[in-house]
Every structure is written in structure tokens, then in C-alpha cells.
Image 1 (cartoon, rainbow, N blue to C red):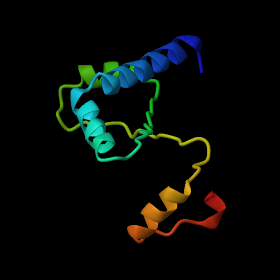
Image 2: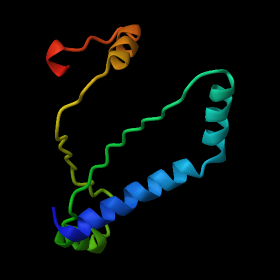
Image 3: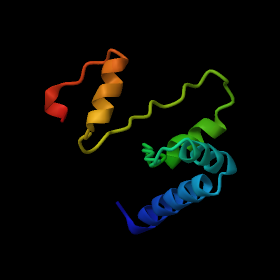
Image 4: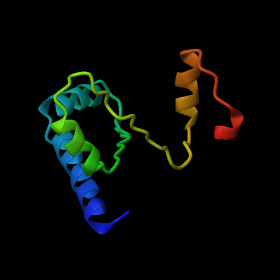
Length: 104
């Protein structure tokens, strides 16, 4: 991954964090949970996919006057493994979703 893209992704992550930390609605909900006597931790996970656009294909589409052109298929790849906590497993079981033991 090239450095400019890494920088842009980092900026997106910072923008997401800032918007969550500045949200009055989230702060209020967390405050209510704390006032009810609970400790709160918030973990959010986002999956962001991106593909480099093919500029030649875009120019062809822009120049094509027919409205019947199809969007090019986009593919996304997931990397890494998912680690489930015991709380994740309980939640998934409550939804009647089976999880392979290998995923642990």
C-alpha cells in the first residue's frame, strides 16, 4: 500500500474517532449506562474496502450516451482472522448462529 493511501486511511480513521467522541447522543447514552451502575467500554469495528478506479473505463462510460451501461463489478478482499471473545460467542449463540471452533 502506498504512503499517500495509508495517510488518507489514517485520516478517515481519525475523522470517525473524532465524530464518535464529539457525539452528544453517544455521550448521553454512555452517561445513562454509567448512572445505572455499569462500567462502559465501546469497541467499534469498521470494514472499509477500496479499489483503484480504472480511469480509461470511466472515460468510456462518460462518453457513452446509452443509459444501458452496466456498473463494473467490484470485488473486495478481507484480510486477517477474526477473534471472537466469549461475549461474542454468547451473543451469536443467542441469535442461533453457529461459530466454528477454529475461529477462536
